[in-house]
Length: 211
Image 1 (cartoon, rainbow, N blue to C red):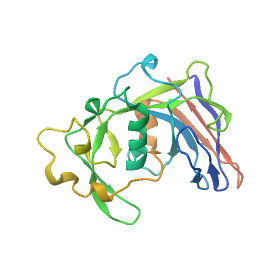
Image 2: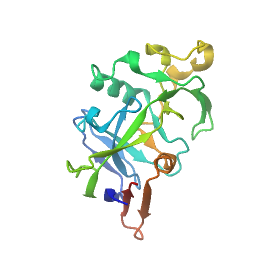
Image 3: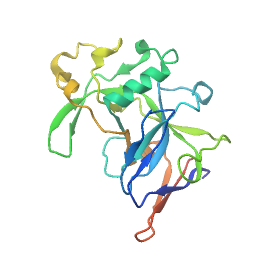
């Protein structure tokens, strides 16, 4: 299977990341949190319809049950950057929310956004070493199961029918993850091969290949 991500670092220590095209201030990445470059798009786009420079960080979290989750701040930033490419009226939500329990044991209903994610290619070490050679990215089609999106769908033009009512009444107080999270479900759904190698107490490596 061809390689998409080759020897991506799993950091042994917490550190700060500067991703100025996405956030104006550095953000913290904790120990053993590998960062991938991903794009969030409308469903069923072709590679020619996706801007390869429009990417955001996502933590690969093997313990994260949903395929992909994104918080209010990051989805708003995604909307702002993509304004004119993906208008609000084009985003659709699935008719039923998902029940999510956070680390503190609190459960809330969270909307599911019909969207795809694209994993950007990287070669050797850091997500910053992304390549412009083919393939730049590969899609993971998630429209049927939805992306867990910590937003109020009523902020968008296209919402499920019948009206969502009180189902999302608590979303405004639930910010979601501090960075987008991608779970192993996403890679399994796409048929990707994912290899995680830890080297004792030093940093490990991740390799992803695609069918």
